[in-house]
Length: 580
Image (cartoon, rainbow, N blue to C red; front, side, top):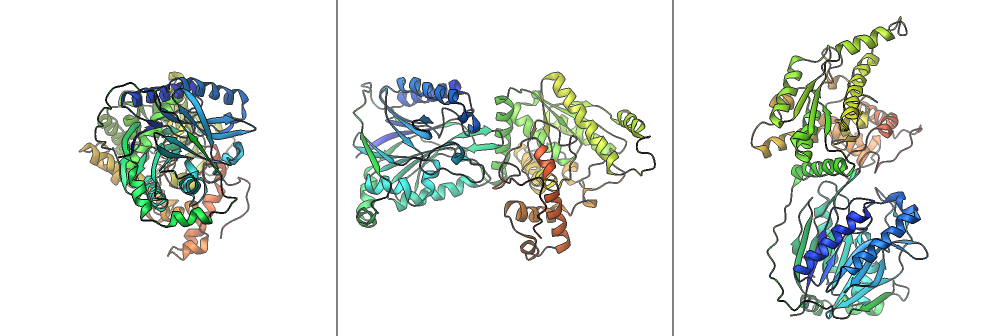
């Protein structure tokens, strides 16, 4: 049997930490060597971290990334590695270094550069023009990078048809949204079966600003069947022995490749083939592999774990060990506090209850009970005296005008000011608690409840926040988030008897409208045709459009939907167009 032992190093890199990323790569190579691996692959732009954005416009950054590739190359004695980095030729390229037995054998340049959603690769990179196949121990292996594999033709087809590649390695940094790994795996399975090839796909894992990379690296056989899968939302080294003879057997029964060899146009992507010499390995028996049991998540559990990972990485990668959270006794702050405790450890989370004259006794009790259940610290800082001072100072300026939302917003801004003061004094980070429903419609206070360094549930609709709370309790096997917090009617408690429903449609009605408009770009007529009131739809759209200026000034938050506000959805602040 013709076989090859492949390792997929699903690592958590940090943008700009060239030395740290290179160290992780070398550690992965050493681990692979001990396991008798023939070929190890690391994610897209593993040396620089992904996405490096305008760091790529700094020549020194690009040059230092190349120096680290040289150091990695020296560490590859006895095996072959594919490492994502930035190559510098006539321009800069998103590239994969083919390193073999301590030498740089060749470099592949990414051909398809995504420039949609969260991607801006056309801004930085030149596109590659040549596919690459290398022969290792009699096995022909094609190299692709992320987007290259999403197209039916292109380098994947060239490498399997013209280059006779039996295995395709795809190094990737594919961002997360809920359920994406399943769709991605279906795509890879389809490409493997369509091209009668084995596909080994390695994805990055970890948080980078608003983005999460979920891992879920896979190896798929030529019939589209899963051979092995790495953990979801955690670092992993996936190692598998690949039966390459299966490719030949599959292709014998598939005449399409024979015809394609004759019909591919002459201007199709050319394929370069590199034959690698036998690597000098230690003469020790190849160790047996343990069966891989990947950690996977479904539905709400996946979203919750992504939020934990994103919060952990954002805080620690930016040098923050501890966080402050305003605990209102409501559902949003409760879920953020639970996520923070799981991400950073309960000893590093402090809740701050800031009751005003309109805060109910139940809300204060609920905040206290939540803090006790989570085991986090709780400070109580009443704001009535500060509020009265503000109102007294502003009284002559507001003379003759009725109290309105201005006085409500002053309360929210006092709370934001207190939280930021605490964070400054103790070198910590404030986690904002606003959700996607509020942020979309502007039902939030600029410099008030929007204050903070990171907005954990910024991309979570309100109805999803309730599901996350229920998941936390179910996972914990007890009532961690008090039932009264989940069951009570939402209220900002900034005036007597205030309810969210006084200002917004019920969330179970609002959220589907927001999904249709914000995530699916449907117009008012299309949304009304789904069965919603024309008046409500127009009001919601108007709120979304008028509040872009608020969203632009809010803290970044974790992307968990297919289209997040800000990173995905970029609209002008000055904008008179209305989609109705």
